[in-house]
Length: 247
Ligand code: OAD
Ligand code: ZN
Image 1 (cartoon, protein in one colour):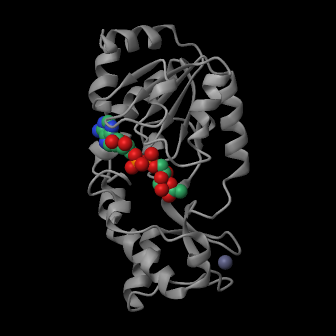
Image 2 (tube, protein in one colour):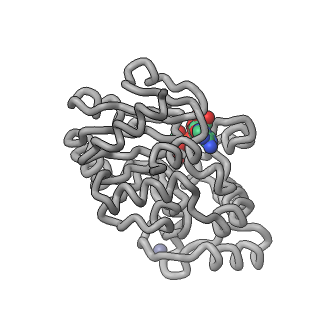
């Protein structure tokens, strides 16, 4: 029944927004944050201030990131990414707002102008001082050659970090503003694979609802926003989205 309802909503959608979290990428071999075995179940996050202040924590941040590189570098888009790409191509989705940093929406073929990354991207790194870009492979070679120490920027000696947003780091203003605009104008807001507990990102579904959108939540676990949603589906994302679009 829920699936039929989702199918009807997607059929009528004209300027939807998909809001994605780590749950859309777990089938691609990338762990989420808050599930058992998720990243924050293994390690406490390193906040931005600590990353800047402590060299040993920069080393630790890079140790963790490089340990995940097989997962990130080898990942292919999953069923959820492919369905959303198709909905963008058909102009039923106006855009995808993502908290994910894995680059898999791009890999599925979603054009940059339809994709807003709120938490940045971990498929490359940059210098926090001069913004020079560095590839992860380059960082790994330096890290390994230098006894597990994080490299500094060869150009300016600044700290090098993946292009992601850490706790305590300012959100990307342009992406936030565009995401807000899309959210206020959308007819349907699909929150997919997010625990919806991290702010300000989790404010988007509320904002959509306040502006009259139909709110759909697809997530294995309950979320704090289930009570305000029009349709809640607690099931596997790839399965649900594929089934909803089957002819
Ligand atoms: P979470 O790990 O908090 O939530 C992912 C949700 O996806 C969980 O509720 C899972 O139950 C669900 N899930 C996982 N696999 C699924 C599947 N195949 N089908 C259906 N549901 C599935 O991840 P996010 O909500 O994305 O930010 O986390 C938000 C932010 O917190 C992240 O962007 C990151 C993190 O700290 C920063 O680091 C700033
Ligand atoms: Zn630099």
